[in-house]
Amino acid sequence: MPWGTVTLFQECASGKFEPYTSDYVLTELGAAPEPKRGRMLNLIGKYNVKVLSISEETNALAEKYIAEGALPEGSLTDARHIAMATVGDLNIIVSLNFRHIVKEKTREMTGAINKIRGYNIVKILSPMEVLDSEKTRYDLE
Image 1 (cartoon, rainbow, N blue to C red):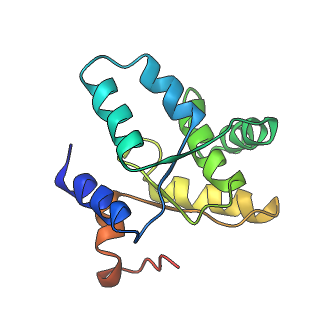
Image 2 (cartoon, helix red, strand yellow):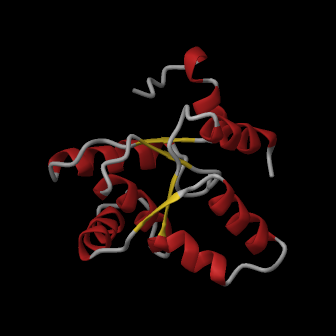
């Protein structure tokens, strides 16, 4: 696991951040090979990560992201992660998925879609952007 991710989990343990995950992640982990599955499930338990539930609202929003081109066809699971954070009214989604999630286009387009549909804009950041937030343009409040 990249050192920034480990540090971010330590920040969660200190109470600086409140960690969440989703049923989508748990479903993905069910198909992951060991030892990755065990390590991730252990982290979820160790850091008391709250699990957000799937809903029709999150599925509809994820499909909207795809339809509007915020994420490419075939990345519905990635769109669902962002939709889950949006519907759950979270401030930030932290990801190491630089292919589809942590991209400027995804940040801008999901933010615009959220705003039009009456949701808050969820900041999409890498672990390092969260940890370096005092030195960057990202305001975590």
